[in-house]
Image (cartoon, rainbow, N blue to C red; front, top):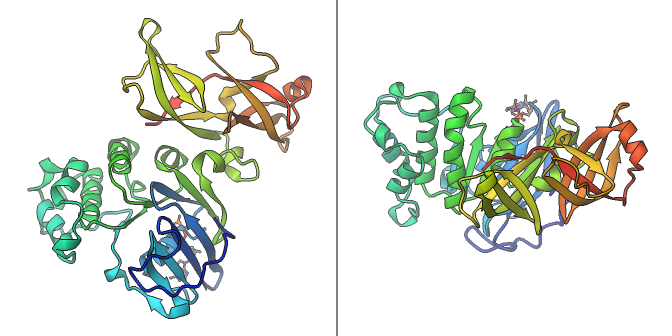
Length: 378
Ligand SMILES: Nc1ncnc2c1ncn2[C@@H]1O[C@H](COP(=O)(O)OP(=O)(O)OP(=O)(O)O)[C@@H](O)[C@H]1O
């Protein structure tokens, strides 16, 4: 996160283990007239890390620094123990020698080569010994077997993007950078491609840095969020925590939500319901096909959570969770935004200011959160 502890003495060269060997450490300062990127990040070395922020906040510039396409004069970058840049030692691994995949908004495939040839072309620069993801696995993961003989001109936008992602994966990157890979697609194509991205997440141990300004994509895919504004990291952390912070813009969005990682605990076939569990608490959702013990991700909108002082048993609301009020935001004259702690998981509730006053909602108060709706994301 921004402002993380300084790096230790960087005596290591490329390939040497630096730091804890599991994380990504990135520090870049660079600018142009009117813009300066200044970040110092400690990111997890696995899962999907979303770079989120308004247009012009510096997301692409940060991605380009990670790729080595921009060189910050004081830059430092270690990816899971491998040093890619350390200007204190004048160390800078050029882009073509970094084991990374880069997927852009629009797939740049060679128009005169079939999909298979495009994939094979991407592999040329990777020595056989470094190929950890067989081409066939990349093809299967993205479901592009039926497209292999086609020319890119005969693919839909979503198919082209799947080919571009498979091409990046087949190079066995140690880091996958994705710059708004779904931005050029319409809603239907986006929906088609998201499950493939989720599969990558579930099946490959490659950290993905994913630029997006679509909260729904971030909610579905990201484990960790870095919120950028004016070239600085305003916040960074697990998605469940960052989305619930009242000092950040997310929580003030009309569609503000939190993300809860849960586990399928049981199915109630008689009522077509499924009981999820998170932090030892039950969360009932409409019956799911997912097997017991599988992991799911749920989204709860702030406006779908109301508060009560007692555990009501005369209500139709299925999910009533014991919670403690952490903080309030009363900037809106009519509505109060409440951040709650539910057994260690953050939840947001948006209630009227009148209700907040009548119930005496103050930080530290024990309440019951009535959750009217839960959407499953994966
Ligand atoms: N090579 C460059 N020379 C000068 N200014 C640049 C250069 N590249 C980017 N900028 C400026 O730096 C700022 C950050 O750009 P960047 O593309 O990183 O933002 P972003 O958050 O990715 O935006 P978007 O969501 O619109 O893609 C912008 O003001 C942009 O105009």
